[in-house]
Image (cartoon, rainbow, N blue to C red; front, side, top):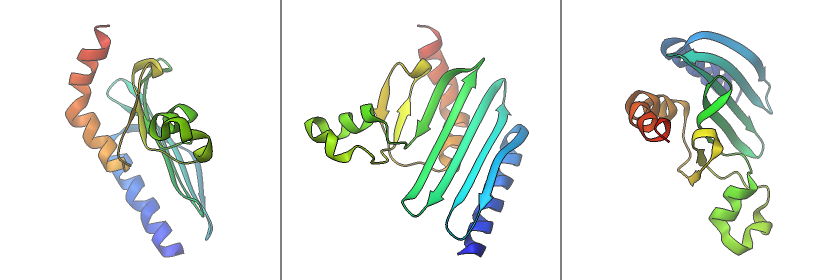
Amino acid sequence: MEKKVEYCFERLMNLIYQKFQEVVIIKKDITSEVFILEVNCVYKSYKIVISEIVDPKGRKYAFYLLKDNLIIVGFDNSPDYRTIKLKHKENYKKYYYERVPHQHTYNKEELYLTQEIQLEDFINWLEKKLDNYLKTYASE
């Protein structure tokens, strides 16, 4: 497993250095039980926050685009009660700690269920959808 984790870390870091600027590793922890990577970097004029955690419970991720500490868009699968309620309706309390993939919109004003994404998916979203997204949310 350790070689697989090291490969995953190297692959992620190569991708991060290719696509972003001013890369700062906030936290890196790789053991046989857990993989944690937290990175801050820059995309165009935006701050990017990347978090990848793989532990015995599975994978937890967060990819956020910020401008002056305001969330422009975020994708994560943290156990957010609003997301769990959206997914499970009135039965949401049974799933309180479930990791549910979702998207936060501008300033966390809206929340949408999504498919689980990888860093590559987030980068693809930035490259192909960010401009149209900004037109929609920046005009409000």
